[in-house]
Length: 169
Image 1 (cartoon, one colour):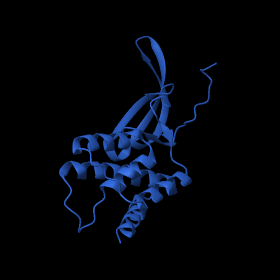
Image 2 (image 1 turned 30 degrees about the horizontal axis):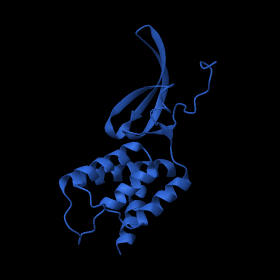
Image 3 (image 1 turned 60 degrees about the vertical axis):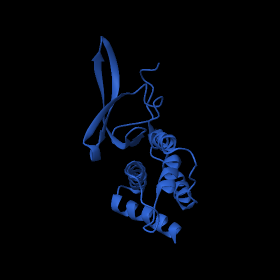
Image 4 (image 1 turned 45 degrees about the vertical axis):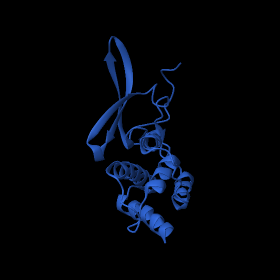
C-alpha cells in the first residue's frame, strides 16, 4: 500500500528543507542501505553547492515542505513591516531562539528574525553573531520569496529591502 502512495513532492519541485532553506528535487532514487531498499529524494541546494538525499517516507516528518503560498509570503512581508520585538533576555538565549526560528523552516518565523535583527544605518552597530543570524534569515526569506515568485532573487531581495527600508522611515 505505502509503496504506491504518491508523494506530495516530485522531481523539479522546489521545496523548503528546514535546516537549509530552498532546494530543488532533482530526482527520486532507490538505494539499498543495510539490506533495506530506501526511496530517496535527491535535493540540490544550488547556492550552497550541496546535494541532500532524504528518505521519501521521512520528508514530511523532518519538516520538508512545499514552497509557501503567495498568501504566506504576503504575511511574511507584513511581519517584516511590524515593530521589532526585542526581548530583554541575554543574547545567548535570544540567539538560540533566532537560530531555532531560522531552522524551523517557517517563513513567518524567519521573517520575525529579519524584522527583529534589522538595523538601519543610524542604529547601533550589530555584533558579529547578530549579523550572521540576520544574514542567514534574510537569505532564507529572500530565496523563498524568489522561488515563489518564479526565481528572480535580485527582485526578491529588492522587495524585502524595500519593505525593511519603508519600515525604518
